[in-house]
Amino acid sequence: MNPLLRLYPREWRERYGDEVSRILADRPPSPADVLDLLLGALDARVRALHPTRSEVPVTARLGPSRIGSLAALVAGVLWIITVLLAFGARGGTGGSPTPFVILLMVASASMLVALFGLDVAGDGQRARLRWSSVLLPAAGIVLTVIGGIGIVLVGDRPFIAGYVPWVFWAPGVILLLLGSALFGTTVAINDGSIRWRGVLLEVGALVQLFGLIGTDLANDDIAIGILGAFLFGGGWIALGLTPNRIPRLAGRIPPAVIGGLLVVALQAGAVYAQSPAPGSPAAGSPATIRAADAVLRDEAGAERGTIAWTQADGGVTVNVSVQGLAPGFHGFHVHAMGECVAPFTSAGGHLNPDGSGHGHHVGDMPPLWVKADGSAVASFTTDLDAVADIVGRAVVVHGGPDNLANVPDRYLAPAPSADPSASPVPLVAGPDTATLNTGDSGPRVACGVIEPTP
Image (cartoon, rainbow, N blue to C red; front, side, top):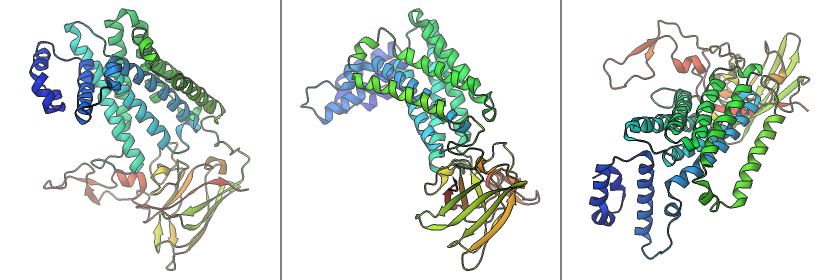
């Protein structure tokens, strides 16, 4: 029996299982058939739980094709909104990444449904192409969602097998876009009546890919990324509006929902238009700002001190006053995101627009020495160009000392991906990945958003 049929209730399998199995044996299921079987299993389960209900379930009334159309519309709109907001947030380096990541995960999940629901029929010789055009972006979507969950939960810390979430996120997005281009090609080949829609998706995916990995966000070079967002998102929207599907579907979508999606898209464009240019100070942080400060709070919300930055000749002077911390050295840095939600992974990684190694990050500061009574006072001058460069970011104090990635090669440590049960355990010399990223400064114990001093 086909594994998908095992999702149906026993009573259904005993009554229809053999017949459906014979049909599937004669004609292997297409991606759309898979979605249809999954929706049928859901409907059968609902009917088994409520046998007296006569109403036809929504999934049965819509069917995989119309559900795929709706999913494509949602995916296209959300993709455009997400990319506009991400690029508008100071070139993708400021603000919390969580909203963007969550929106992109929802858009990706919608694309997964659309890929199966909008599968375009073709001859048997193109079966491999059809399945490849669905499974390749589906694999990318799975990686994107795994990476997104990691970013939300642990930020830039190791997530799975010693790898940070971005290791899953970045290849996932690339596979998603390449696979979507292949899906657009398949649509164009198999259905001449909507060929231009498939070509739009194909071109949009490739332009979006180049816009994300081939442009410099720090130098206003994001026009291709924005163009790619509209082309790629527009491709999905166009597929969702396919004439032979949307007339019946449109009657089931409340006009308020369609109007709401349009309003949200327009609002996203307005947010982007009003956002500061990439590389410029955050909104409300003009280059004339000469001073800023942050109030540090621990995970329980208790105040742990303040840090102040003042523009000075040749750099920025930093004054630190904290209390209630564990005695000893503590690493502390300016982080890229301006959000402090316990356990403060929402602050992202160290402010490091140049991609330098730890110890040379823009956000790196000297380790903080806390006395036996839990207090610390420090004053120093950094080579930061302007106070405005850090306004809207977060400053984080860690629970342990920061070695600034200064680990000689004579020291050995287990490889990040090593199997602990292996004998012998593979070792690497010098600083490992975590050390190179964070200096082994431990958990984040206090955080504060940097704001202009009134």
